[in-house]
Length: 87
Image 1 (tube, rainbow, N blue to C red):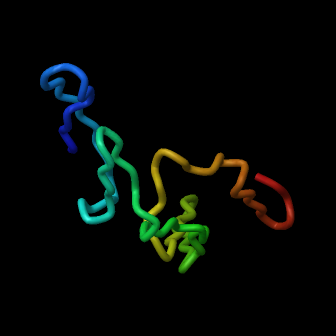
Image 2: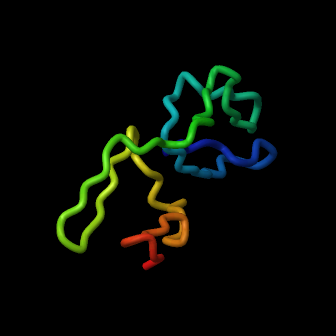
C-alpha cells in the first residue's frame, strides 16, 4: 500500500492506493503523481499447457505459470470430445 499526500495545495490529505506485483523501486514520484517506471515488464505470453490428466470423469490441466483467477477463460474455451462427439 502506498500512502501519500493527495493534494499539495491544502495541508496533509492522506490518500492510499494498493498496487500488487510492483516493488517500490519500480515507482517514480513527481510532485503528487506516482507512476510506474519504464523498467516494469508486462507479461505478454499466454500460459501453455504443461500436462493434462484424466481421472474418470475429471480432466485436469497443469499450466507452466499461475493463471490469473480474475481473468479465467470461459468453459467454452475447453471443448471436450468423447469418441469424436462433443460433450
